[in-house]
Amino acid sequence: MFIPGILITLLTFPGVIVHELAHQLFCRWFKVPVFEVVYMRVGNPAGYVLHEKVNNKWQNMMISVGPFILNSLLGALIALPAALPVFKLNNANPLDYVLIYLGVSIAMHAFPSTGDATNIWEDVKEADTPLLVKLVGYPVVGLIYLGSLGSFFWLDLAYGIAIAIGLPNLIIALLA
Image (cartoon, rainbow, N blue to C red; front, side):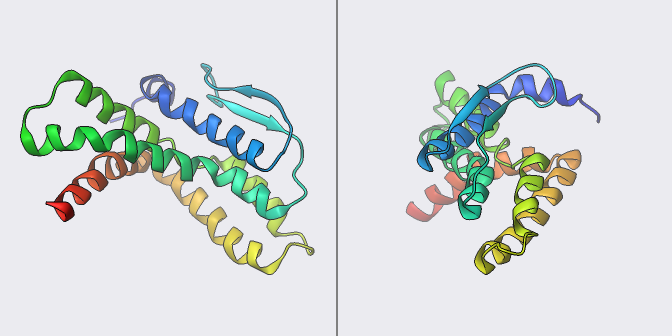
């Protein structure tokens, strides 16, 4: 079933906003000046952060993958309090379902964009890039492109469900 990407973006807009916020937050942590932030818009890309060129290659990679870290953590944490009433106790209220929706929509926008992959690629192929950055960067670029290809097959949604529903259910099962 084909659903236009713009419709998915509109339905899961909280994830887009958190994705761009993560880029901006990592820029701030590394004291990289940010020129412009668009948290959400109708178009491609749905949002973006324009920042100064980062000379530290490790920091540049972290800014690029920041959304993967923040969106994954936030998606799981937001959905966690709702997982017990929704999936185990059968006494959920509407807020619990909103939290599950928010968790899934935020987590499904965790994957960095192909623009982020290109940004990392430009750094890792340079001769002066530290070996550790290359060892981490090359696989990260490959994974980002695989994730982008996988989004055609709903991998981003599957990831969002795994993080916001599967992970909280696993935690509950381990603690019960």
